[in-house]
Length: 315
Image 1: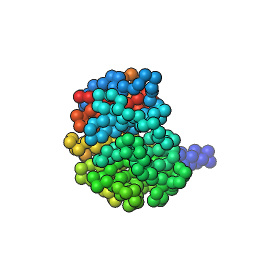
Image 2 (image 1 turned 180 degrees about the vertical axis):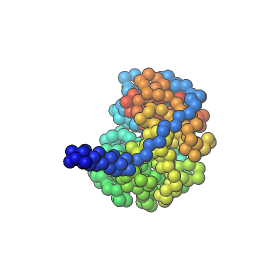
Image 3 (image 1 turned 90 degrees about the vertical axis):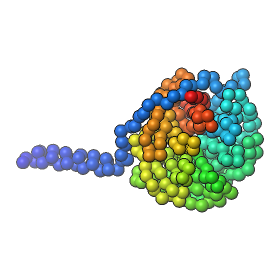
């Protein structure tokens, strides 16, 4: 073997070794599941805003026990409540928020908002009176082990006893659990691709058995845990999970796949049982489907970042 041949073989070996190491370091993305089209139609012009009003980027949506719809957006009126027909009921006149992100309504009807830029989770009465704030003084960020601080948190959900689970988030890589009084209980997760590690914790949901489903967005998977952070399983072939929403009456999980711009319905074995919509700008299409909610009739509400709207899909 000549010196040149030896050098060429060495370069090829080094290249193969580098590619093997790179492949081992990256998360494994399975082939994307699909399913039958869900039997829904878009309700055109659903949200009835006053003349001259517009949403900004619509980051979140939820429904309360009366099927009223709460919208969190980045326009001049961040928190707006509608009835199920789209009639506007109220817009809070004063909301100290830097960048709207997540919103959920708890079992008592209180509205919780997540300010991603100010690193805050805030609890409000339905009339907009602040009841609780969790986060650092002056909007300071916490680290991955902080017990009362976040770093770009995304959203939250609730257990039946009032405990809250916060998806934290864009910089921190964990789920943090508090009791109903805002007192720290535990947290789990850090940056990475292994089981129990996260890369952008974007949402969290609980099923009827109390299992915790985590939208591990940049790793393109849903991870499943018990409420103390014990790893139970993962789904790696359902798309890019932005928003998660559990529907008890169907024992099913609905998901915003924000990369493929579709809504996915999943059974609790991680099988896709239906899909809805596709990328686009016109009514019925989606552009960065961010979060979603499902009301008692099964209607689906989807918040969109790039289309500056919330859409209603009815059966």
